[in-house]
Length: 171
Length: 215
Image (cartoon, rainbow over all chains, first blue to last red):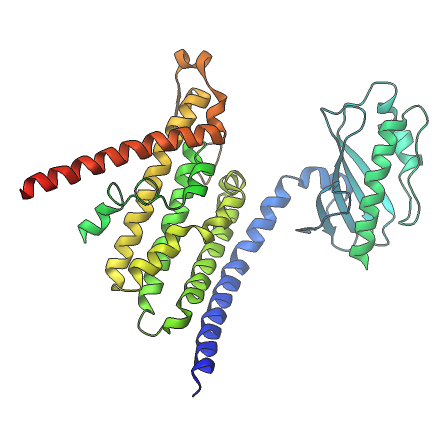
């Protein structure tokens, strides 16, 4: 037999064995890792999608880099935790957004924000969330809020970027 | 065999004696926790890679031995990484990218090439253990100094459950004099160079003694 062929076969066998081994270990550790990733976020996710099953989408990222973590909600849609900076540069805004299977925004939850009281903070009042964000389809841009331009345009940019990612996930 | 094991600590300590694996040891030695976690991961990979390389040393074609070693090491590192991620998430987070970078740690490929490929399985395993513990020992030395100077105390927690602190202390008197510089790369280099000098001194002295004994 040709020497080169022998070498190729030997390396091939080693690589195949190593692939097999990694696959075996991965099948054991993957559910545990997913469970850990989920545990820290489950409390918030449960508010948007009560009683649903969540699967973390590892490696999901949007163009603007706003998405911190994303989840597939089995049978219901998607959820994404995003972070962006508004007027207050020391405390970033953290939001959890729920999408249905068509990508329409079904829920939004504020995890953290310390925008200026009476101005930027208006963006996160429930009445404004309901009119500006909820029910927007993938093609629609979320609304800006006058008097809170910096905060609401920061959120708008982040949500638009997240919508693009969700659109890609839906395919 | 005992000699193989002992070599890894002082004379051929991979970090201070052979200057191998410096990148990871400088970067990761910010706390005792990281040092022990990283040391254990490297030791496990070293033992298994030495054993596997030694086990197939007679059937490995010489021309492709390096790719074969790299595949073996990469496999082991991936497995260790997945296990750490699953069972010690805090350690996984604090080691970050350096866990995966064990794959390019030259101690491992170095021992595979220099020792395991020429020696039987048992001796290779002992060599891996000795080198791994030598690396851990070096990391612990650097990290204890750095953590003490940078934070004024030492904390070591259970890697399986970060809320459970195994032992830790804070020196109150030291608290106003902490130097945060030591948690950065400058502190790493300073600490490392002092230890390297100390080890070189010990090595030189013992070599001199041997010479005199011969006379």
